[in-house]
Amino acid sequence: MKRPAPAFTVVAALAITAAWAVISFAAGNARAGKLLPVAARSLPPPPPAAADHRDAAPAGRLGDHAKPFALSVESGRRVGGVGNSDGLAGGADHAPRPLLASTPSAHLEESDRDAFEDDEAPPSTLTPDQRHRLRPTRRAGRIAYLNRHVGTRANMNWIMRELGLNITHLDPDDLDFHYGMTALESARHRQSGAIAALCHQYDVIIVGDTIPDGRALLDAVLLDDPACAATHLVLEITNRFDFGIGKGEASLSEAAAAADAAAFRDALNALYVRDCRRLHVVANNPFEVYYAYVRGVRFRRWRLLRPSGHSYIPPLTDLKVKDAEDPVLAFKDLKPRLRQVFDEYSISVKSLDILYGGPHALVKYRAFVESPYQVSTMKLYENLAAGVVVAVPSSRLWRELNMFGVQEYTLCWPDVRHLAPAAYPRLVDFYHPDLASAIYHFDSFDDLRRMVDPGWSDAKEKNARAEGPLVMRHLRDVALRGWQDILFDAGALVY
Image 1 (cartoon, helix red, strand yellow):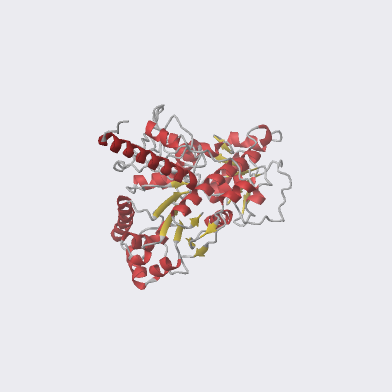
Image 2 (cartoon, rainbow, N blue to C red):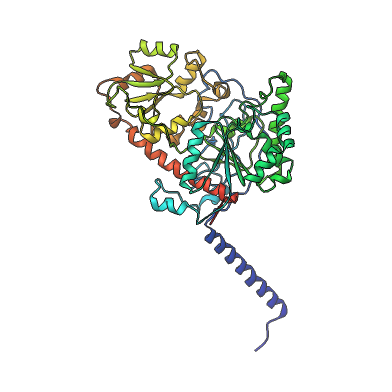
């Protein structure tokens, strides 16, 4: 028998080695059970300043060919990438598009669709067995939550409890972190050793709600502070990434405050350019990353993980409303101008005080009417999870209430007034398809008045009282899986 030629032997050996490497790599990933990350793609330059669309946008602005900025969320996986978002804001030709669907979508590019074909869609509910599988077999990592908002704190408590982890809550005021921290204050904290001490004490630090509270930590990561070389930083954006920035020092002039805010944006972009693997970004609603993008800030990888809707607020016992079918609607902190409108349309509304008892109290009313002051609120998810019937003005009516001054307080109006009307379902959770099946949208006050008619019944229309908890169970599952993935990448979960 002839011996094979040497060249043939070498080629055959290389082929066998390569095949074995591929099989081993695939088996290793199967054992780890981790999703491979979508490769980060370069982003286009930020869009030009948006025109002011105070009037209704021309019909057909978006067109059938336009790609949505935010797809329906089916997975909390790591993402990256961009897409076209014509019509989200006047003159905006580009905006980042989170690829957050676990099943192929007609809106995904071919290359994007390939990345999701093998993903397993998460279940719509968490059974005890599923919750057990989410828990790590061995726990590691010290986790801190830097936060000054009670609602986001309650949400994080629930998430960590479900994952079987402990978390330490840090109040920025206790650390002498001033609201809207400036670059000068950041430098002082780093020079004092306070930031090094935090990094030494915790493996993962999550900055929630007010992102500038973590500015000194961001600067330490950017400047490669040896004390923070092993610490992972998570930014959980719930209220604009730059909220309060430039206002931390009362002595700053307007020009100095603007320069300070620009320096904060530059620091975030520097981390984007460096592709810092120790920085993780979470947005709890789809508007946050779009808002950052149109202000020139890019995040290479980010996740859309909505709040769990869990509430620790105990119900009040002195409520006079005993039957959810009583023709009474609830409205928190009703302002005089809107109260006048309700009176003109003979809509029976009870204005609630600040301490009204939370979602367990609202569920006793026929419906809770809200004219949003933010693109999303923690109580929106809490109410839906508790089975509260939520009614909000349609996006068209909501814009009119703000443009004509009927709504006297809207914190987010300066940020969203430039949006084309068709962008609201993509960026504002009160109108987003992921939650729309559990929310009533009234396009006029005559439409709202139907809800106080004796013959009206939620069970005969949307059945939102049952739909809300179902929607939130799914979003909770997505959030748990997303946070689990982040903490695994940060080394805080070891299996």
